[in-house]
Amino acid sequence: MIDSAKVTAWYRDNARDLPWRRPGTTPWGILLSEVMSHQTPVARVAPIWEEWIARWPTPADLAAAPTDAVLRAWGTLGYPRRALRLKECAQTLVDAWDGAVPQSVDSLLALPGIGDYTARAVAAFAYGRAVPVVDTNVRRVYARAVLGRPVARPQKAELAWVAELLPDADAAPDASASGAPANPEAAVFSAGLMELGALVCTATSPACGECPLGDDCAWLVAGSPAPTADELARRKVQKFEGTDRQVRGKIMKVLREADAPVPQSAIDVVWPDDAQRSRALYSLLEDGLAAQDADGRFRLP
Image (tube, rainbow, N blue to C red; front, side, top):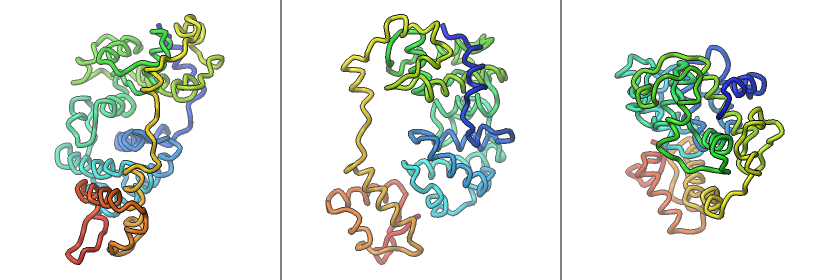
């Protein structure tokens, strides 16, 4: 079992000074940080988040912003469709919630671009709700400390497992979705589990000597078993070089940096493979991340 008090105490002494963790951050700021941090290192997210929150401090501000300005401000964070979904989300908050960010998981899940993890993270970290928040880091800490395994696949039961660890938890995770009670200690513990996985209980080089759970860790008791071949295969990071994602990024860079629509020739020079370049450009048009004018030139929407 994981001792929540140990995790919370460790977190208060070791948490990174991320801008969205500072006093005064609004629920909108928390929502932005969670969407931006998905599949993106927080070191890259922090300066972009600070620019966004200064430029568009409320959902109404982002909803009113031109789409091309939003995509330019997204920069090189990757997966730029997230920027479009954030703008849609902001508009929904204005239309349906009078510009406020709702508190319940169910209401958050109804917003554009907000998935199960993000909804629970916003409920917990913006409003102190006692809901289980499970990401890759939390899953890894739980798998090692409680199950004694090096890694674990996502499982439906994991929300219930983590819910049982929350300080003074007395509700099942599904019941908590519609309106979990406020419990700041539970939210701090949830943040601590994530931080422990990010900084100490890492995938490849865990610093077990620095872990507050070292004395109770089932993985250490079992002799720190190595991951199986199947587990290693699941852990393998997808390559980026040479993928359509890389080509899309290069085309987006051209469009972001242009102050006027660009001809096809400006896009042709970014990648030598005609078929792949054409496929990437077409996908950007389909996703609403690029637009083509009547004269054949390309621009941000």
